[in-house]
Image 1 (cartoon, helix red, strand yellow):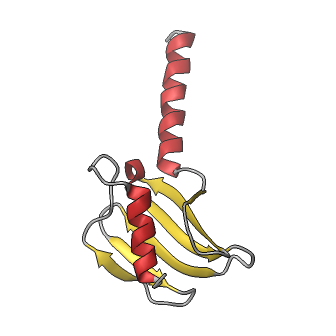
Image 2 (tube, helix red, strand yellow):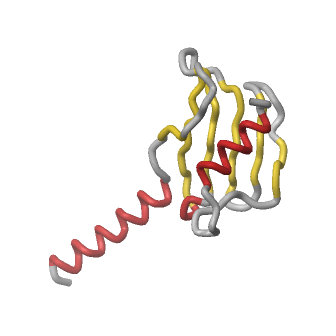
Length: 112
């Protein structure tokens, strides 16, 4: 096998491993002062993800939405029970503004 073929194979394997591991966390727009909305993907082509509202200073959890590649789960507060929120999750490419849908769902959930 040529060194170019080995290099391409290694790049393909590495890219797949990174995709499966998900991405780093980043913030989404959130209008409540003193709180931050953080999002990270965990795989399934961005169909597995977690979005959390936290206190900006203490990092205490206020609420969480989590998609497990199929169902949308929600939790209010650090010790709240996680419950199925919907049978499906907001998805990119479905004509849905996913960051907006996440924000609006968390606003309703947290009564903001």
